[in-house]
Length: 267
Image (cartoon, rainbow, N blue to C red; front, side, top):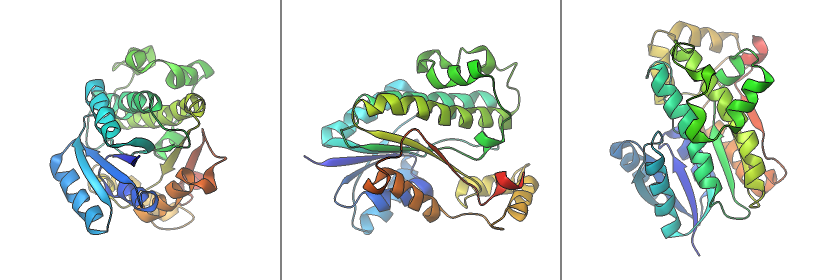
């Protein structure tokens, strides 16, 4: 039986993790844009990986279920790398909540139904989830455990409450880490593990959009003030992803790994 690693989001972080965990496995590389999947698939195929591509819109449950079915037709899903999303400079609060928060919840529900015993998943969050002030226990519970199809109806997520894209992004990324914690319990019943990585500023096309956008000065200040004194690289995130998805991380699940070069510590 072929073992399948599903990568959602064809960007450099998803690729970096996939390169470390997919030797001898089949990568299903999914993204909203065909150009992104084709470009990334060529890089991985040229490096010796077996790759197929798919188009997915993570704001659509039907599209996510189609991706699950496509992957299962190839083999057993042993790994899920969820690295898709939009940033505050790229989208409105409504789109951010639908893609980054709701979409992630649907991905975890759907793949949690089929993940193979011994499998593992990683969700790429953000240090922004750690910059959000503390929520109430009831709000935390609601973000973690509300069924995905009811999530966007929560009072705390209504657009009159969430008017700023950065606020929407922070709530979404906090929600991702809380959702992973809850879903890890359900995945564990199938013998699988699930964790979040919350990177700081990693040099990717998305980060370059932010650095060139209206929040660019703030991003540069974060780089200057952090203990490491630089931005990170996708390969550094890939190293942590490989730990969490491999046997060396077999006792780690339901956790959120903040790797931001010390930005949060400086704050």
